[in-house]
Image (cartoon, rainbow, N blue to C red; front, side, top):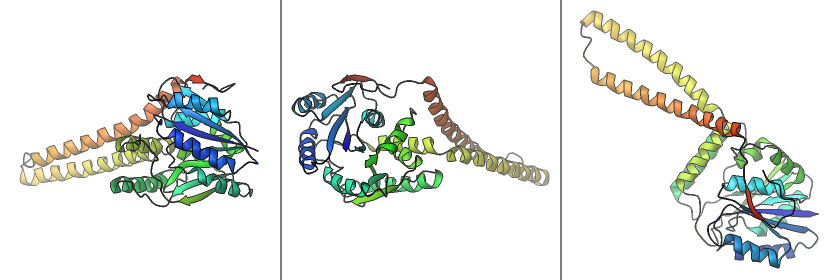
Amino acid sequence: MKISLIIPCYNEEESLPPLYEELKRVTASMEEYEFEMLFVDDGSKDKTLPILKEMAAEDERVQYISFSRNFGKESAMYAGFCNATGDYVAVMDADMQDPPTLLPKMLEILSTGEYDSVATRRVTRKGEPKIRSWFARMFYKLMNKVSDVDVVDGARDFRLMKREMVDAIVSMGEVNRFSKGIFGWIGFRTYWLPYENVERVAGQTKWSFWKLFKYSIDGIVNFSDAPLKMASVGGILFTFIAMITMLVIFIRALIWGNAVAGWPSLVCIILFVGGVQLFCLGMMGQYVSKVYKETKKRPIYIVGETNKKDVVRK
């Protein structure tokens, strides 16, 4: 049996050496399995690619795919799924926040045949800013309410999957990708493995608060039409309120004959309704933007350099 390890990398020159040493130690304890370490360099600007080349020269199990530029982690993961050849496929981060030591336990659970994938979830967020943790929890709650996908609180991309599940992921060739949603949408039986949060082994996180916010918006737009329904309901509600308000103003003008009074509140109402309209247009614009990107049929990633034979280029 062959296990493919997909490891997206972006400016991870400090994390790669300790990660590689840990992977060698863990895989050495699993001699009955053949391993493929597939590193996907997402257009790094540091020494990530030279380090990958050194590792590949030392270990034939190490393969790398280097993008022509930075396409994002989602594209890197998809490239890994397209090019992984193992019977089992795992995806993990290069910063060791996804502990390789969990692989034997994940494989043991998957080998029982009861599940198609073993996914990890953090039960603590030690070391993470409290406000960021709060927003993350709120996102998972909102995502589960407005969409049909099951996204578990604290879920990581770190998971081990059977070949059938990976093939299903590859078949979803959409440009606008949100893997946590895709994992839930395709179904399959998943075992959630809890573990304590682990801080980065080296380097700095590439996910700022703003990037995470945009990523969460992408997740909601990609897997739910609830924002569009909210805009429709809001339009009906404000139309009803406007009709009631017009009736009240008309009756008041007939009785008291003062139609000019109250113009400051009228201005506030106009500004408020105008803001709501722009907000709804912005939500619709997000969906139009997604459709626009999909219709252009641009490749999800472009391979700049690789040592892998018969690499799949999308």
